[in-house]
Length: 304
Image (spheres, helix red, strand yellow):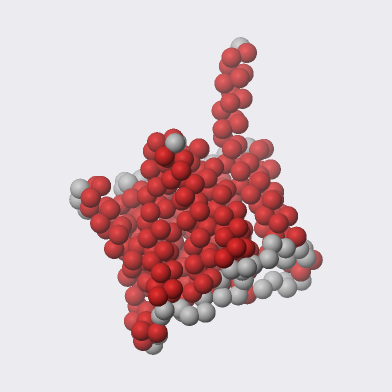
């Protein structure tokens, strides 16, 4: 029971990152927000890794490049695009676009690693992509053909591309390191990369002007939205399995929309609602396809 509560809270925490990001968008520059978020996250990840793993595993020469690439894609690029995108579009819309992550990972895994796509998973991908197009175009699909898509939507879709890259590179990293160590090392690498523009882009002085609310949101993003969310999610995978834990990912865009509606007073438009139904249904169908397939196999075996 406690595991399910933690997974639900994890999904809410992750949904809340869109609200927190939107809150600080007007006060904190994207580079500063990205660096401070992961400086906080890296600090706690180092503590968690030392306490749980007992040591920091040595890195081989072959692992250095994948760790740097994962830090560059999943931390550096993703977060700059994330905070920049939230300057232009609402949190709920951004959450639904980023909900495409598992779909895009499935597509590229099939292309690059020849992982099989069955009919159910393919149907889920079509549902999600259709919903995302509705959300991105604000219900006007013809705008996509005419390339009338906003800057914010393009930036957030860039987050999806960078996260796919991070996930695929992460396979190489996690083949020899635990998920916690992999995320810790990639977080530290990404933070080091973010430190360069943070220190030399002339916006370092902004920190003294941040409000308590700004710092509270940055801490939320770093600790709750990154460290605690990750830790509880992988704890859930270890206890109830990846399939059951993965279903909670579907709660993330829902919680983001609900939180942004009540906290940010963002309207739930017809295109957002209908597109959201398609996206979430597609993600659920894709995640559930393996479970359905295994149940059918057991049923066939029982009949035989």
